[in-house]
Length: 296
Image (cartoon, rainbow, N blue to C red; front, side):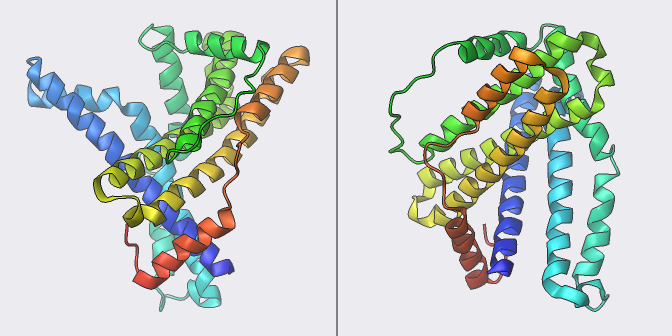
């Protein structure tokens, strides 16, 4: 029912937030260790290690703080009128969660920072953004493949979808950089839309990577609910990417360029086999209900 859907989405977002946090923390720790081995002091290694993953940290700050608030908000909704009462735990949970979108840089600032830092790295030659973006543009002008893909392995189609979502980001960000150059900072709505695409890619990919790793360790049977959460998160992410991609393209592209990019967007957000999200939500909610807690 309706409450089951809410419980499923709440659990799914918590799982995705955990997955992305574990991934970033692991990457930072590895980078710190490499810096120490190269002769840096531990303090210097920590500063440089965290700095190298500042984009991921901005992504996490935005995504997790908003998921926490949404989770508390849905909790109030489930309680109904009693949700506003101090006699229930949700009223304090919502107030506690709300501040997280403001401190340590508002989420709007962190959104713009995540894309802004990536673009600056590209302009300094630290990251090749325009090369892959040009490759995506060339792909759009070519003939798409009509081969029947093999999706027999777990997450085969989901990984392909992640790769296509990355093409959406490259298409949008690359074209925006080419059009506006250093003046891109002044186009805040475009930066925020591009950052939402980036956020969803990172969160969805992290969730799939964690689940795939645990399937190899513990077996697919024990991870059925986690697999469902990974698939559901990606489905939601695709919708968000499509919306923000379309708004971005319409805001700066015109004529044939706009038509080509919108056609590319449509191609990149299309599943071959759409997941049954109603069944996925039911399976997730059933697990949460049977355990009577967050159990992942």
